[in-house]
Every structure is written in structure tokens, then in C-alpha cells.
Length: 235
Figure 1 (cartoon, rainbow, N blue to C red):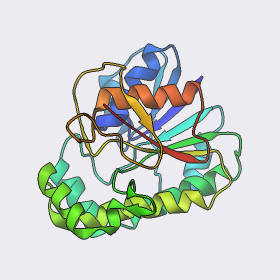
Figure 2: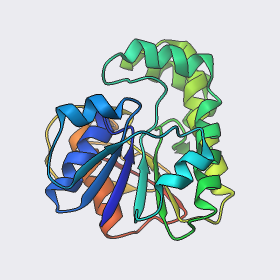
Figure 3: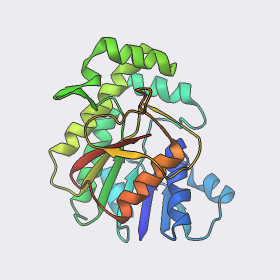
């Protein structure tokens, strides 16, 4: 298959590229500075290109030939400067919903292309019908544990709003909420999959490695189970 990856130099996006190539897929990796990335990464079956996710016409122009477009969009480059991404996300938390609308608009001319959006864990339900993003006390406690400023709650709600944008669409979208605690680690290929509630380990933690998140995403590319739905994973 031919897979496009927006945010291909990010923590999750870079691992999605590696996972897809390792399974024999063709990948077009999109980055804000594709020329630098291309010079550094010349793997077989990998093409680098630039795209502005907030430009629907520009996104539509890169869709021909793609079977699936995976978006790991974040403002800035969290893999290189987390603090900058946090600042940008807090400054304009509406950017996630804006990006979702842009992607859906682009898909209007390519309705058979699947879209997978890598979002946040804050829109997962802590009880039926109640999402973490709407519970300030729990949300702030979770941000404290992750070492993020409480102001980042606005960005968490921005991710939730992006999911709600997708839910109004009849396009072939899938929304991926990673575990609440996600970081570079080991590729085990062993995890559990859930829907709208977090997957917790024996200690009650929602956690996953970025490598296993990439495995789950390419699994969904190869065997679609969550079209027009959200899914999550955890150990």
C-alpha cells in the first residue's frame, strides 16, 4: 500500500514511517522541511515532500496515489522542542479542529482515501459519556504527572474538538487516541485495543510506547477495524 504520513519527523510519525517501511509499504513522508529530511533519510520506498495541513487545496494535491493518509500533526516539532509545541498548542488550541476540517475538505475530492488522525487521550471516557477533557481536577492531575503545564488543558480540549469534527463527517476517517502516557520505548507488538475508554494496565496506568503505537496504526491500515470510529491501545 501507499501510505502518506504527516508529521513524519515527530515522535510517533517517525516510528509510523519505520513500521510501514518494515512491512513493505511505500511511504510518502510529509514534513515542514522535507529537503532537510530527505537529505538525512534515503531509505528505499520512502519519498519526502512538504505539505501545509492547514491548506486544504495543498493537502488535496498530494492525495492522488495514496491509499491512506495518517496525520500526526502537532504545532511545531515536539520531537525536537516539546516546550515550543506546548506553547503553540496553548496559544491556539483551535488548530487541531482547523486541521481536521482541512483534511476532510481535501478528502472531498478523494473520498476513497482513508484518513487516520493521531489525536490525544483526553477525549477518552473516564465513565460512560464523561470524557477526561471535561473534568478539570482529573485532567490537571494527569498533566501534573506528565510534567506538562496545566494550561495545556486547552490543547487537550482542542484534540477533543478535532474528534468531534471528524464525527460529523461521512469520510473514511479513523481517530487514534494513544495511551495517556506515551513515550519512546520498546516495540513489543503486544498490547490491548479499546474503543472510547482507556486501556489500563494492572497498576491502573494508561501507557504505551511510541513504537507499539506505530504497530497499532499500521495494523489498522492493513486491516481496517475502526472506520468512522475512534480506537485506543494500552498495555
